[in-house]
Length: 115
Picture 1 (tube, helix red, strand yellow):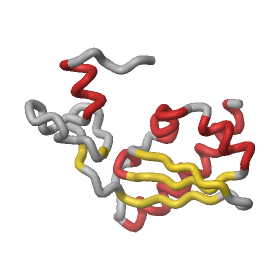
Picture 2 (tube, helix red, strand yellow):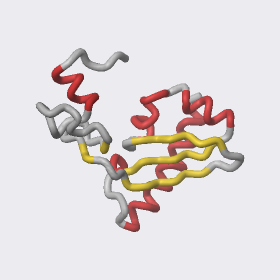
Picture 3 (cartoon, one colour):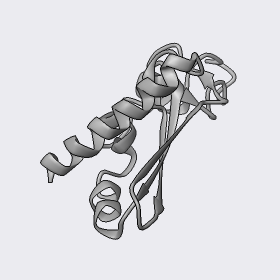
Picture 4 (cartoon, one colour):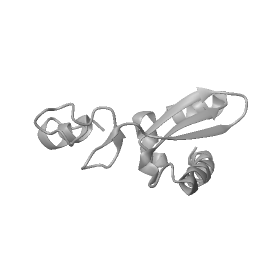
C-alpha cells in the first residue's frame, strides 16, 4: 500500500516543483491538488480520507477518475491558518479566533479532532 503511495507522492512532488519554479506557489501548503487516478489508485488514496492532504503536504487534494494518471496543481485561493499553515476555506469561521481554521480552533478551544 505505502509503496504505491510513495510513488504517487514522488510524481506529485515533481508537479508541485514545476509550478513552484513559475512562482505560482512557494511552499507546498500553498498548493491544492487534483489527482487524476485509475480506479485502483483512487480506492487506495480515498482510504486515507482527510489525511491525504497531509501525505502530500498540501492544503487540499481532490481525486478524479481517469484512465491516465495526472496531477493538476493550483495555488489555493483560501486564507492561511496561522497555526497549521494550511490554506482553508474555514479560516476565520470562528469570530473569536479569526486567524485559525476550524480544525485548529477545535483542537485548541474545543473537543479536538477524532483520530
